[in-house]
Image 1 (tube, rainbow over the protein chains, first blue to last red):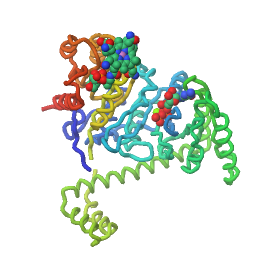
Image 2 (image 1 turned 120 degrees about the horizontal axis):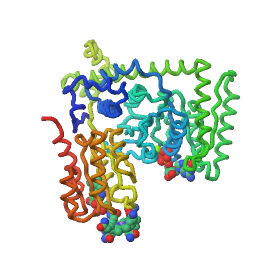
Image 3 (image 1 turned 45 degrees about the horizontal axis):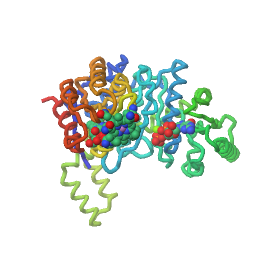
Image 4 (image 1 turned 180 degrees about the horizontal axis):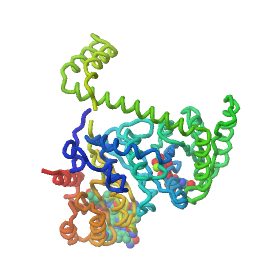
Length: 340
Length: 138
Ligand code: B12
Ligand SMILES: Nc1nc2c(ncn2[C@@H]2O[C@H](COP(=O)(O)OP(=O)(O)OP(=O)(O)O)[C@@H](O)[C@H]2O)c(=O)[nH]1
Ligand SMILES: [Mg+2]
């Protein structure tokens, strides 16, 4: 379960340089420092939280847009042209693109960035490829921390592309201000969406590959679904009705409409106080997750060399003790210690 | 729980059409537990900028047409300019004249891998691992 760190540059060596001094540089706009801190977050290097603590007061300015949809619908290609349009409007952009880690080898091929290389020399576009490293829901454990770093670096808008497995990557809605769901004709994933509860979290729908046959039908179907849902809901007048936008990411068509729609939705959220509510929820999720992670890590560290844990494992396996009783025993024994 | 993953940026020169070598090697590295960021056809300066944003440990180039020495020189120069030459490991493979090999090594490539007995999966992986180990302090 526990793998040994197999690399360690100066800056990422646990304990070596407890104050990495990265936060200060990031606030001055140092891209390399930001990139390095992103590694430290992913590798859970000691001292990382100190840097994030320093950055946190400077975050909360960026607008976070999550983009999700089945594999191959064109998420990365769409983001590429979306970036172009946002840049035209003078906004700086951070992008986090997530691909799956192989469960067998722990390695990953990260191929999203390939579609966005045209922006590689633009200092105002920071793109980062991320592997899930076993995390579920189409995100990686480090995603929220990474958003904070890009936010503190001064990016106006941060785009997050989830893994595209079509299994309802709705986790992204919990970490973003707006959630864009992307479909394409011929993928037959509308039913999948209903099952996965995606309709509930979508703020904007994009039907990409509009150059292909069937795009208009997909759009119509979606609009039908949105309409019947709004009838079913005890429709308060102020409720946002998701737009459905046709795009051709390869042909750079429909993108301005997408940008407009994102802005319009943001205005709606701001005007109704919904944005604040969403961010409050996000803060709650992050706090709870951080508590969970800290407790888990703490218990893990406290018990990993402990014979007591092994003893309990054996007892649970042999049905001498049930896992619930064993867990509360461990929690009672190990949590009073002050954690940092 | 810390897991320091090796991150590799993989690219082929702008006009290169041979993609099999780079895809094959990318697969090998993934299977060795590394995270491989694919760039496809690229220019040296843009490879470096990307490696910087990705905080990559390794830059890998695959080349079959065109001079690896010229591309290599531009790559290393760009890396120098961006201050990542010291921390980054450079490797290169593909088909090119044998006399380029010593030049590439002299230039600063940690590993040069033309087809043949010295370019097996194990050779490439251990080259990367050793180079990273030798960059560790102490
Ligand atoms: C397949 C192939 C093609 C395919 C490529 C398809 C594709 N998508 O990749 C196509 C038909 C497109 C093609 C086109 C051409 N080709 Co061609 N092609 C080949 C061929 C038959 C196989 C190459 C290959 O893919 N091998 C598979 C890989 C996995 O094996 P490998 O190369 O041994 O890889 C190992 C190492 O090199 C190393 N490695 C490779 N890359 C990297 C990267 C890193 C980071 C590391 C660590 C290691 C590493 O690791 C691998 C595993 O050990 C070779 C001949 C041959 N038998 O090698 C000619 C060959 C490469 N082609 C050649 C030529 C000349 C061309 C053309 C110019 C032909 C023409 N006149 O039109 C065009 C070039 C177009 C262009 N601008 O790129 C020449 C190159 C001459 C040279 N450099 O000395 C070769 C050698 C044929 C010859 N004998 O003349 N080609
Ligand atoms: N015809 C057409 N093809 C497109 C369009 N957008 C993307 N594609 C193609 O669809 C394929 C997949 O595109 P990506 O952008 O990689 O899709 P993705 O959703 O990011 O894929 P994953 O990240 O693997 O889930 C590529 O071959 C694109 O060129 C479009 O609008 N029209
Ligand atoms: Mg993608």
